[in-house]
Length: 382
Ligand SMILES: *Cc1c(COP(=O)(O)O)cnc(C)c1O
Image (tube, rainbow, N blue to C red; front, side, top):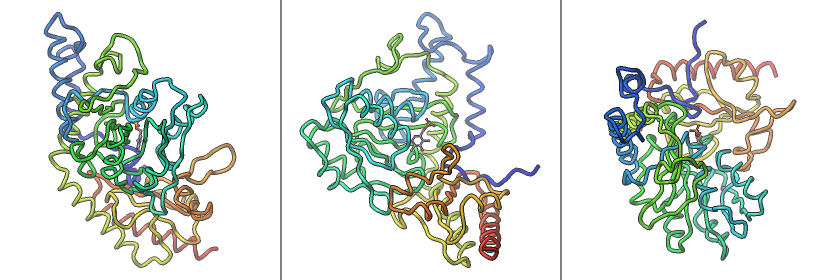
């Protein structure tokens, strides 16, 4: 069977072949397989050197100090560590987040709520943005943490993290930012974005799955409570033997991202334009999210009069995503699309198309032609 065209880079990316080449050198008997925490022999020292070099590469992409990078198993764990770690078991505190965060943040905040923490769920505007004024208006005397994403994974909308962070920094309130969809897709610079904690993932940036990082600011010094105990790795914040091959892979992937960022953004813009150009003959297509202030690789589109599930069935040659989740017998519309004010009906007509490094011009031209065909056919049989 011919493989469908992959247009779901926001869900995950393939590992860059040069990253995979590097990773295998840290697994086998002839490679650097030692435990990076082994201090008594060269196997350990070499593994540790590889881990520290990767730490620099990850730090470099966001202009952080390598000592501010804590390895985790992915952005989900980083979000958990940041939020639970900042709250540190207290229940008489207040946390602010939004209704359209990734589930890693939503479910962690719901868990805190269940334990007595007050959580304010800010509602974004129709483009998916939270304003600094909204955050400021929600602050209380006991607010200890604000958690917002830099780029929304369903919409591609970019939040004004610098302004929100500046306002929170003045008040000494911790700011956690999920940047899993931003790293490698737009400039991210913690020297100009006043954030305290930032979640990163390997597999959204052409690195392997199962590895991520949490940026933890050193100046001013941010204290978070560990969630996984056992040996005190990662300056006590996250114990467990470090997966050298995964870490080397994420480091290499982030180094490539840093080096090719502007070229990659331009290439994605061209792909997006070619894709939209291909759809231009089709009426009743609306872009969900923001026209401006978005990353180029994610397009969330609603097709008037066409149900997304039927459309996906017709688009067998494309691998795309509908934000909808199958909960029991019914299909739940995306909470993100509902969160920016779409009706259930509108949300049921939306598909997310996301492009990446290995997407070709031919593929997006093919994809848009397929969409025009299938939408036209579905509309004609209504
Ligand atoms: C993918 C993603 C995550 C989860 O990352 P994992 O590394 O898969 O755990 C968290 N937040 C956002 C915004 C994401 O896109």
